[in-house]
Image (cartoon, rainbow, N blue to C red; front, side, top):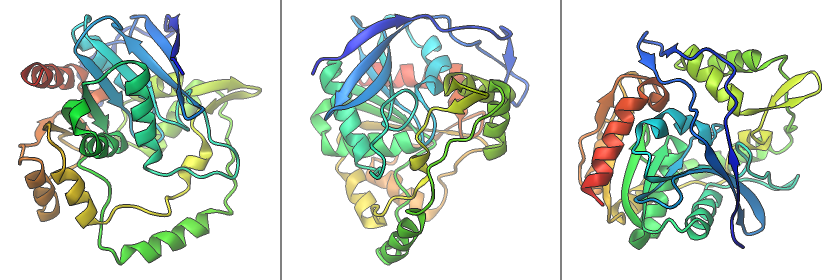
Length: 314
C-alpha cells in the first residue's frame, strides 16, 4: 500500500516567544508546512509528518512513550530545510491508529512501524533519531536491518530496561495485573489544563514545551480535550529483553551511534551503561542543557549535533 499525503499548515494561536525552564529563549511553534502522511503497517493506519520529500539525506525521527511526532518540531526547524525529514507517530500515539479493543501492544510492534515507514516513504538508507523509547526502537531496528541505517542518534536512551533473566516472572505477573484495568480517557477542560497534567507527570517540562505537546497531542471532545494516545499504552509489556539480549542487540549495530542527553536527564556513568556504550563503539555521550526532553529545552543545540553527525556519516 502506498502512503497518502496532504499539506498541513500548523495552527498558531499562542505567543511567538518562549523560554525553556532555564529561562533561555527557544524557537516558537513551527510555521513550516508539513506533509501529513498516512502509512499502513499491516493494515493499521500510521500517521507521520514529512518535510522536504524530494530532498536528501533521509532522516526518520522516533518519539518516546506517550509522546508524538511534534516533539521534534523545534529541532526540525533548526535542520537544513532541504533535508528529507519524517517524524512518525508510533501506533497508539498521536494520530496513528489504535489496535482493536482487547489487543495488546508489544515493543517489537514499533519495529514494524519503522519498517513500514521506511518502505512506503522511500527512506532507505536512513539516519535514525530516537528519543527515549524511540531510541530503544531505533537501536533495535539498526541491529535487525543494518544495511538500511546510515547513522543513529539516540536522545536520552541507550536501549530498553534490561535486567537479569529472573525478572521475567515478575514482569509477567505485572502484565497480568494490568489486564483488568480499564482503558479510559480523561477529559480536560482546555489545552492548558492538559498541559498542566503533562507537567504533573513530568516536572522537567517547561511551560512552553508542555503547552506545545498538549496542543498537538490532544483532540477536541464534548467538554474539553482528550489526549490522542491510546490509554491501553499504559499497560505494561508481558515480555522484554534481558541485559544479555540488550547487549547482543547493541553489538549487532553496524552504523555509527551518537548519544545525546540532558544535563539534568539520564547519566551514562555507571557500569551497566558503560558496558552498553562499549558494544556500540564507546561513543562519549554529549551533554546538552536540559532535562529528559532535551530536544524541547535546547532544540537548536540538539539539531546542531544531529546535522554535524549526519553530514559526517552521509
